Image 1 (cartoon, rainbow, N blue to C red):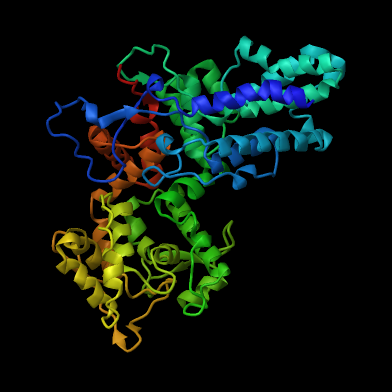
Image 2: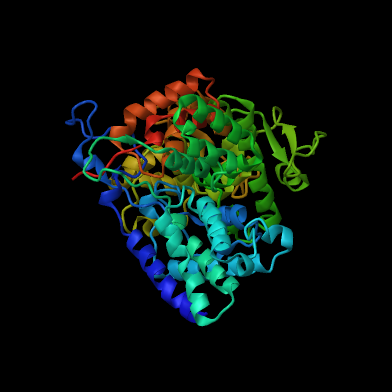
Length: 557
């Protein structure tokens, strides 16, 4: 059957490579990197988008998490083939932004290996699992049976109805197997592999019916169902959401609201912790964070694993409780296991373990308050052997306030690193005396120094060696504060926190970078979320009901 594979799949692989380059005919995307204040071009008339604010929107392919989750739900498999794929690039911090999700020949070869591994495993699976896809015997049922299997499978995999001509194309390996005298099941294997090698599976197509149109259009129900499912679950729509798209009901506000609420209550919504939250707060690769074992022997893999569970549990609490997002910076509780209890010097607590095996503990009498004092955040913003006030300050500004921080001038970091006789704070002060560095470091460093009471793995301390730590800081407006707890309390009062979270989730969910033209809509969505209570789930719902999420802007002619 090698000829079947060659004859049928070389055209599919070519289609994948061509599809990866598609841009203008499918839509447009505002320019910008998703950071900054979104002010845009002041010469642009209100309500219009400057030409410089727009660029073609490329087809968005499944990222590695989405691919693994989708084949899990499609095949019922425990295989995770995307773990072996090339790493996804990030756009505005997120691996869902289409313009960053390039597709190389190496990726296409990985898709082909994955497709055949998944199909082979399916055919070797127990009858019950195999029968969910292979619903009849193609040897006995012939083409009618094959069409039934492929039509149902492709409908789920492609997340939309299957056209007759596409189904006929999928039947070609069956016909070729017959010509070569091979078993019909061999042809079916290649046809099923073709389904998951198709651009309709690998990408999330949103194709404009009128390629000359210039006005934004609402997504059709199947496009919307795909956007919604991948935004909340990082996987394909389930049967109920697919039915809502098939009937057209999903186009109504009431049905969309009902589906969002249902999906948020589903356990699959925990995917938001490993996709949106993990990339926004930069703990997605925490378990691979490099720690100098000689200087910080306590920074074990067990500690990193517990920190990741802690921040997931913390964010889950705000997704489900309705607490205002500002409280994420002032919350006097966290979730720990025995490993973190020892690291933080906290009592183990007597609450029942949650799904991740962690217990909720009160931190009112401890120097722990909200996100800024979680081990995951403090560790990922540190160097292998010490803290980094620069990284910590930049983190607060870019991740929580959506400030645009430009990269440092070439050679600056190396030059200052040579000043070995100075304390860390004195060394950082040099940044603010350099004209090339002062603009950024005068803002970043005072914020980063306020977190210096926490070492490179998040342990609280008051001294570093023989030197007492100075954790005083200052906001860009000149407001002074002392330490992480005061900083968190001040940030919690800032209206920029909720607006930044809205912007981050809108970038993640819509899969495109935002720019100045999006600022009014970001502000409107933020206001809607605050009107509903201002919780993290309110932000999520407001974004998913918004026009930027539900519409596409066509490409400029």
